[in-house]
Image 1: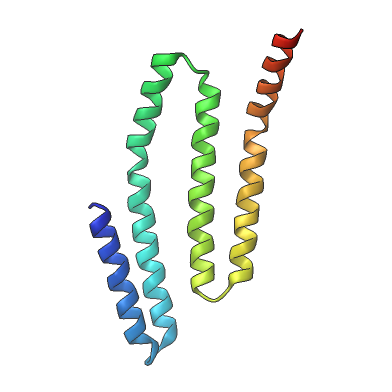
Image 2: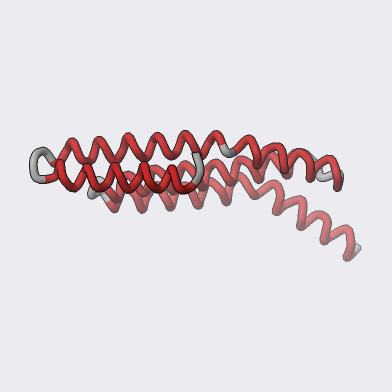
Length: 128
């Protein structure tokens, strides 16, 4: 499936949810959530391409694997936080969605701290 397929699945779910809103609004929310989970899982399958590319980059320029694993963790945190935040906001719980976004940002910051510390150490070695 391409972006066209994912967009079509999303639009179809939204249009059906709008139709169901007059009958039972909770069915529309469930339908949109199911479509979101389907598209999310499809997006995860695309991660194989990203991982293969990062492995090729690591082998070409001899980057420490810890840096690449940190990058992958950061991408995963951002993807999951954005997805769950969007679902919460669509369901009418914007405050929870905002808290998930904030937690995701703090998680990315905490995961990136070892890389930042290594950068500071490298800069200190150049200055000394």
